[in-house]
Length: 109
Image (cartoon, rainbow, N blue to C red):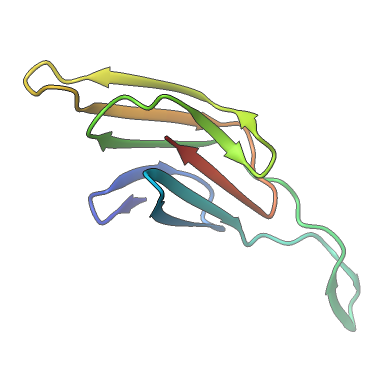
């Protein structure tokens, strides 16, 4: 999935991705829309939402991030930054998230 040229995301089809900026931070929201089994054929209530993953994302950034983590759990995320030598500080950011729950946010600052 490519988000309007902003990011390239490799995730299951049941994951929605929303990108926002707040207070000089990039917030990439991952919303897991998958569902577990229902309690009965006549009851549509879902007891659990199974985690999904792995998820990878790549995008161009103006500069190398100083901190990258998954909120709200403050889980560290495996990431790398490949600096462009043709331009000052910009480069390609890549991250891998092992799994997400119902709603997790990749915070890049």
